[in-house]
Length: 338
Figure 1 (tube, one colour):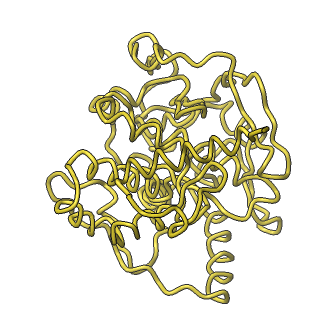
Figure 2 (cartoon, helix red, strand yellow; figure 1 turned 180 degrees about the vertical axis):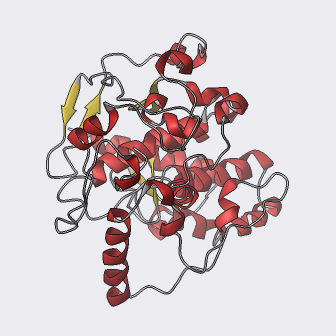
């Protein structure tokens, strides 16, 4: 008898998650696993769970270790490493949940950023219809840097001790509709094209954030599982309080495939060393070698920067905006941070 190895992998994945969640029900009641993802909602229904708040239900039905693993599966799969499969989570996340003793050894912020970078790259393809990743992080970054792109009813709140920065922007989302969404899309496109240096908050995290968080100056690859993305603080020197110059070319990937379809997107590097991340002193940017501190206006740049920016970026979204790119005067340049 010939056995399909893919079927064995599915059965192993299902058995693993059933054991992880402590389910002791018939397989047919919850359905089989499909591909490389496992449906979260099905397994949570086995516990009678509806969300994170209902995890207290497990306190009466299982050991603390299993409760923590269930919570981590939900947390990682629905916040940091979100895909576009609705209530499903990649089997890769389960690999981290299986090793709770290692959770404190991972750089979760760097992993979430690498995953988000990859998803933004995929979303830039012509046939892309959505975006995945930790969009809460992206949304808060936009609100922090671009006040004119914030919803009119949303004002920053004071953070309580220990609260995450995202709580500054907690508010009620407006009701969505096709007509309203189309109008908002046109509005935001025009707003981005109308940005001026004065309408950007260049240093929302302080004049010298790298003095508080030294990891900000890390230069190299960020990694999550098989995903590796390049991180280079020399491309956003103004956020660190330094004059922006034309950056050096980034490290070239070994394999690059960026077709119009999102399915064939692939990017890999010749070497990904965790030792780079662990040896911060040898793999971080020395700002004084690249630039000088900003002394006048927070959007200062060198003479060669704007020519580089226009050549490598897309200064306008709408073709009929017709901005005047005066390289000699930053005040008349409609531009974004990068």
